[in-house]
Length: 182
Image 1 (spheres, rainbow, N blue to C red):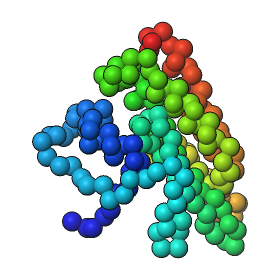
Image 2: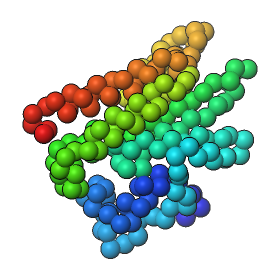
Image 3: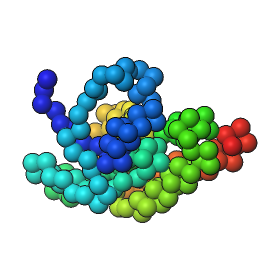
């Protein structure tokens, strides 16, 4: 309708076509119909230019086989800042039941998830973008910025990226040690 193009991690494009039952889409959609067409399958370390913005992509499988992290640089108030977003932090697809349902009885995707976090946790990021508001405390930071507009932006925080990924890494290890999840 609007000409929007969809970009997805290449492994998810393949999985969605060949093994749609691995996604939660079967819970909400009639698989006899076409849901969408993918304009571009993103590969690891790919750079894609949109206008004057270059996005740097990393595949970070775990939440799904084609989860992606993206990074870009942008000038803000005369300063070049690096932005980052990790697009697959949720542990819902790493629960015992889901992994069993998608034929991963040894739960190998959990180790993949940890490896993916480790592969990007040391990236320098000034502004962490969340794909959900809780990922980067956007509501709290907005409230803080609104209350104190004269202070530096709470969104510019070069420690937030590592803090966020370390927390999800810890949550994954806790899940792996939970007897009910093994």
